[in-house]
Length: 304
Image (tube, rainbow, N blue to C red; front, side):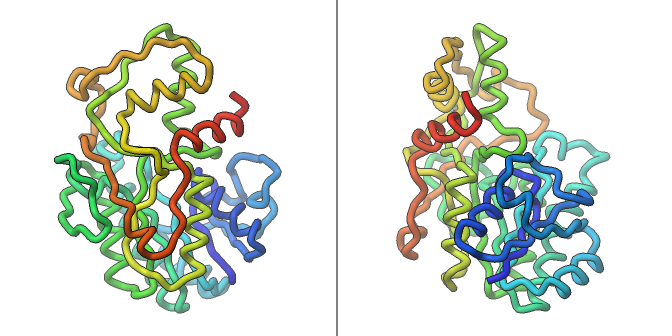
């Protein structure tokens, strides 16, 4: 099985490439840089084939995919800077990457008859209430530009393809690139007290664990919408920070505040990021480990 992975310089694409290598599959990595520009950790992603590609260039996408002819495309590339996406001078670029770029990948996928995995987000919903969002829920009401563009990507994939996995995730952390854990560790080492919101509820997702699930999926034909985060229960960003500092051995004081009290964010954030993952088990997929366990393994990986 040959798998084309976009966004390999990011957290998830990096781990998907390495998981493919562990299982003996042929992975072809892709990103916008002329050569692989992610973390140089000596893993398989740095040695496997690499194709520079601007996903907003439809002709280039069609040409590269027609030449590579993958059996599967795992589309991890995305604009993920949620607040920056709200800037007037950035919006066209965000739509070009997340919406039209995804449509380009889906069209190319259809042309070669490949399966497609599209990584989406809880931000396609309005984040209200307390009930976990179901994978097949179509009550879309994105709160911000990022969510709207990711939704348009979903609609492009589902409208063009039959062999697709749309996998919504939340609160992502991994080795490659920036994330909440790295930020809070840096802040915790330089501040005695930090303020963290306690009214946004969800569950973290470790890309190392998620990559295993995604490769499990592409080995099947159990297509459709799925939600995937680590197990371990629903928490707030405040709860997450407390556990990060506890496991990292930091004595930093964490003060819970509301989103309104915290302020600062340009983009509206969902209060309810709870994702119902029951469909994974129903389809026979193995759930991800608990987020507490994932955090422990991740801190060791980044040598904290």
